[in-house]
Image (tube, one colour):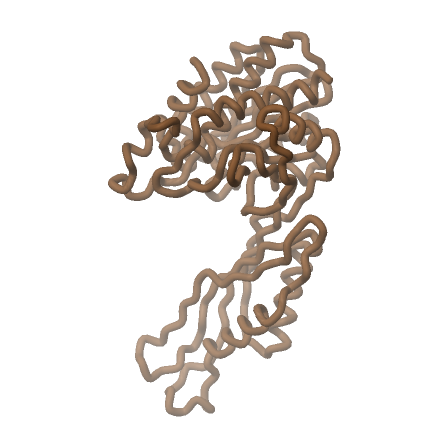
Length: 375
């Protein structure tokens, strides 16, 4: 099965989170034929695959996910979102860019590396999950716990998330901001709108909080990360009548934060602001991941060189974007980068990837393996 056929076959398997739909079994068989020890790791409803070739250091891991987000209204697509339609050199499908093209390119690069260097030093491995787009509780996080318990952690990790902006390889993610959400209830005092002095309006308290959080930047950022951001994403407060001040307000907000904070210091900063404003509140904190940064070194040098040799581009090293499963790998002291196709259409109707970019991506992944395990 060639690279494009493998990409299309993965896409045709409707693996909406957390359903893997047989993608990992297909890939495990291919990797096993190439001499990888392929192991299915299932936690809850989530399928994970750990496939490794070699038992020595250093260990290079290609990581990704086989799950995709729902396609949205099928009638708005140019064709069936799971048909893997190629038109004018572009592959249109849900998961084309995020990230079945990358997964296929990784596996084919690993196959070729094993065939080219059957006695290669070190180890090369693939880590896949079917729960990156969902809660991500039983996916990469659980696999990493398992590998640590077995003493099988690795040195380098290349995540195939769609990192590129305008051209393949123009952006390499070397870190990500942390993500902290607050689910908050503000307590007020139910009362008649004509007698506001006898009540306490939680909506007004919420307005003071938002004003305080947005009046000036939370921080100035640093050399590697932009300033921390605060965004309200949901608000609800209604007494059920137009002449009644509500008794409480519920809201949800999110902070994307840099390495100047931890989840604990940032939560304390928000709570201090609420206390200073005299807001009566209850808040539950949910963290999707702490910020991480991979310093320039052997991994970043290899990825930058591989991209330059393939595309002629000097890639930008960036920490932008949302979160990825790299947040579960980096805390173990592992160097992590993300390099993948263009991200302009991910999660959108008519998601697409250039067919030529899939082949180029396979060559980049192969060259990264050569640079880290052969040179």
